[in-house]
Image (cartoon, rainbow, N blue to C red; front, side):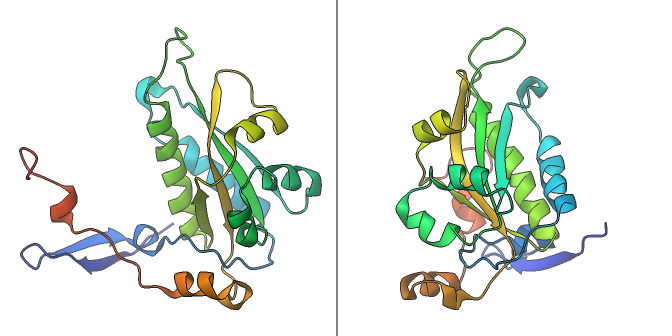
Length: 202
């Protein structure tokens, strides 16, 4: 699929940098539409995650997911999310839990990169979602221990994020406070704040 680049500005020497659309357009919305996600698209999300880079090609990420069509499984995942996030995540067509395998399969030694690698897989998933017209909102506000128990996550694995996925809906379904957040201007730190050539620039 052809992906077109967009141009954005940053505040170093008035340079212009091209990045691909799905990265620039990715947004963590809360206003999800009541519209099912096609099964083919769901599989494309996990295919994108599958191809993420990982230490020793361990691929430590795992996902437990459910659509609203599977009411029991969806309810189980939903119950692991905290009350504030439930207030808007209830509208998402797809919920999932991202999980990291804590040790290497080849020698059972601790894999301290598992969380980093799982994050990379979710980043792939998020960019693919944007390219498909979907939105992803990752949540730290959930209960990992409850997820482990309810979703039968085995020992040696850790639930690290809850994720809502869906099509964009009307912001009017949200509370006034969340409506304001939904329409707020997106911002990012300047490249000069996050990237230093040679050594840390204090």
